[in-house]
Image (cartoon, rainbow, N blue to C red; front, side):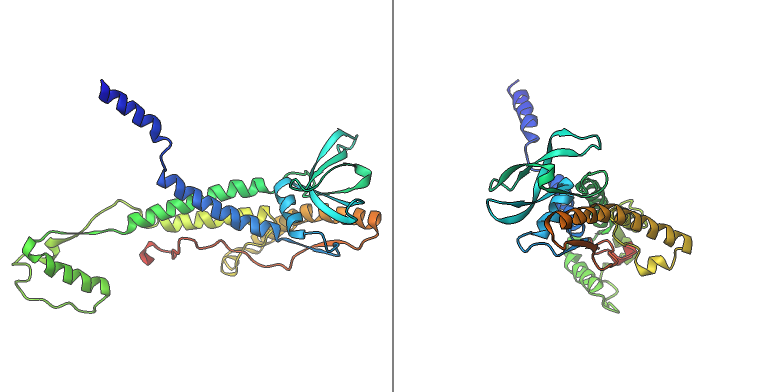
Length: 305
């Protein structure tokens, strides 16, 4: 009876023990989340902003909350672009009539809409962090599956020899793994036993094309995410295999997504310039093709393992 209590207690506390598989999955998720977030907050280039405005933080806030509030503070005599939220009632156009602005405990303001300019991340005012969270998880799952299958694809040799011949076979296998062009031995090396009978390759049941298919799936997921962020993603060798209509359709999607986020920022620029007599502008950064990172270091074939 006492043993049963111990087993129950053990099962209760087992859930709190570190899980290597979950930790590895979480590591990949954090890695992809960082990569995607870095790409997202570097899509736009702000020009003409007052020197005190941190445009990196501005884009980080838009990525995370889809709203940054720009205003001039009389107490500090400077401009701010900080995280905030709508407060009070919303007008007939579904715009807040006031904003609560916070600066990590250093500044807090209640501002009427006429005393500030909201910079929205897009027309629907939803954060891109949702896209990043979804695709960082999906990419991590595929990456982890690739890793598991690559480990399983390392098919070990099962060698059966007498104990007295073990060192001989270890030397033979060492030469094989070193890539020696020829391996020499005597006729009685294995005491008359055929070499083919002594060496067997363990069958792990892994599909040799699985890793390649997973790499293709990961590439498609990456391209989907890049398109949703408005980032060019079709690399040159892939574009050669696409027909003109497919390339045009993909480029149109990317351009449309860019316009959604860029228009929201440019509208804010127009209001800022009119209200504060500034010359602020926002443009898409110089275009570049972004392909998915080869995290696992795989080739296009399991044979490259």
